[in-house]
Amino acid sequence: MTTRHPKTLLVIVAEAAIERLLISDARQHGVQAWTISDVRSAGQDGEREGAWEADRTVELKLVCSDEVADSVAEHVMRVYARHYHVAMYFSPVAVLRPERY
Image (cartoon, rainbow, N blue to C red; front, side):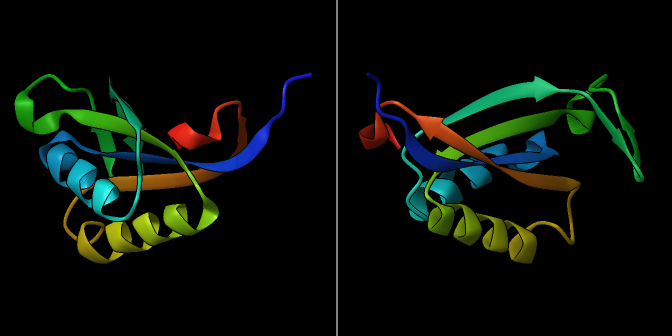
């Protein structure tokens, strides 16, 4: 039987301009692995179609402990949310190899 280990998925959707900063900050908060995708998005601030460099959006997925997810989210809200388009959400997930997260 496969053993599942509970973790938290923190998804950050943000302007691509801060992608490297978000990765660096996530690592400093203890995140060991991440996945990044280029995405298009829309919300109350309008659409971001990615038609030009300054309009690009990325989705950063982090799987980590609850504590690390909370720490990263609080940091992103404090440092970036006021100046950049940022959306975040949490989901409970289960992983098979907890040492990778």
